[in-house]
Length: 171
Image (cartoon, rainbow, N blue to C red; front, side):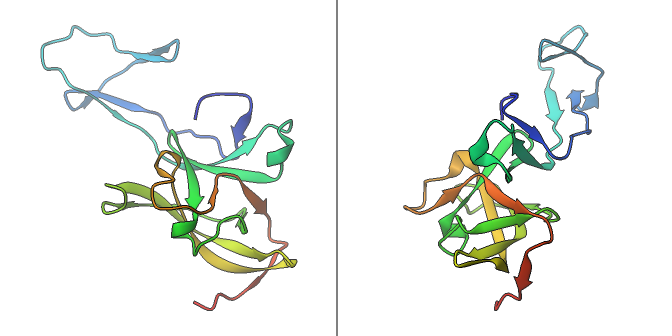
């Protein structure tokens, strides 16, 4: 996601980026959004970066009323969404409890290799929102959606505390 005042994170990232030259960590400074490494470069020097990829909950600015009370998911720099095909045909009725933990899992067979996010969420019934059923949610990187047929896709999800009563899943 691009830095903006339209959103913020519920949990602040604290892990630093590790930059290595030829496999060894190096010190760097940040200037205008760029990492600057002070060294004399040699032919074939290799630079690698170890990026922290925590799953974070994105919340919108309060002026974006359509997304009030909702969260989106981001892992590292990638935004995630949920598609119908991974979530029993529907995603617009899914609600994310505040205590949900999302776990990344790599699937090499999925669209030539994707890291998905898995977590337990609530499926609501439009006729009775006070009851919900716990179900599995699979989210994919936003860049990869719309490749497996027509159906629902969701980026922003309603978020609830513990006030929703849960019915046991029949799975």
